Image 1 (cartoon, rainbow, N blue to C red):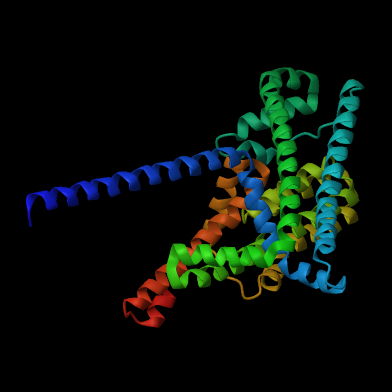
Image 2 (cartoon, one colour):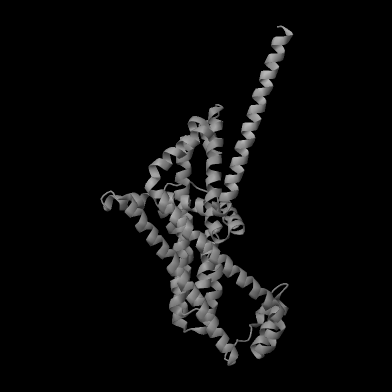
Length: 369
C-alpha cells in the first residue's frame, strides 16, 4: 500500500475517533445535566413508577368498571391514595399534639406518677445499675431526674424536630410520587412498549423477558412487603387507639418502618403491652396482648396471600434496601429502596441463571443456584 493512501486512512481513522469522542462527551454531558436537574425528583419518579406497577391490576379493573375511561380511573385512584396517605398522617399529628399537650400539663401540675422499678432491672448487664438508679430517682422525684437529663433531652429535642421536618418532606415527596403514578397509569401501554424497547437495547433478545420479570418482582415486593407492613401497622395502631396508648400515631409509624425492614412489630408492641398492663384493667391488657400477638404473627398468613407466585427475595436484601433507602432518601426512600434492591437482586439472579443455561450447564443446577 502506498504511503499516501496509508496516511489518508490513518487520518480518516483519527477523524472518526475524534468525532466519536466528541459525540460521546456531548451525550455524557447531556445525561449528566438531565440527572442533575432530575436529582431532587428522582425518588418521587421511581416511587411513582413503583406505585403505577403495583396498582396496575386494580387500575385495569376500575377502568373496565367505568366503561373504559382510563383518565377518570387514574384520578379516582390518586384521590383514594392521597386520602389513605393524608388521613393517617393527620391522625398521627393530632395524636402527637394531644400527647405533648397532656404531658406538658401533667408536668406543670406535677401529676405524673412513675412506678418504682422492679428489682431485676438492676441485674441487667452493663446498663442495669445505672438504669435502676435513674428510674428509682424519677419515681421519687421526677423534677430532679429531669434536671439531670436536661442536656440529653436537649439533643433529643433537636433530633425530634429534625425528624419531624424530614417526615414532612417525605410526605410531600410521597404526594408527588402518587401524582406521577396517576400520570403514568393512562399511558401504561406506551410506557410498556418503551420499556421493552429499552430493555432490548440493553440486554438484547432477553431484555423484554427481564423487563416482565422486573415488573412481576415489583408487584410481588409491593404487595408482600409494603402491603403487609401497612396492614400490620394499621391494625396495631387501631388497637393502641382503642386502649388509649399515648402517641399511638408515633408507635404506629415505628411499627410501619420496622415491618418494611422485615423486623418484627413486637419490638414496639412488647413495651406498649407492658405499659397497658401497668395502666389499664387486667381484662383490657390481656385482650390487647392477644391482639398484639395476632398482629405480630399476621405476616405469616398475609405474605402468601399477597405475594402469590411472586419472586422470593431474601430478608437480608429487603432489610438492606429499606434501611439504605431510608438513610439516603428519608421515609420515601424506605419504600423505594426495598423495591429497587429487590428488583436488582431478582434481575441479577435471572441473568446469572440464564447465563449458566447458555453455557450448557444442567438446568436443575442453574435453578438451584
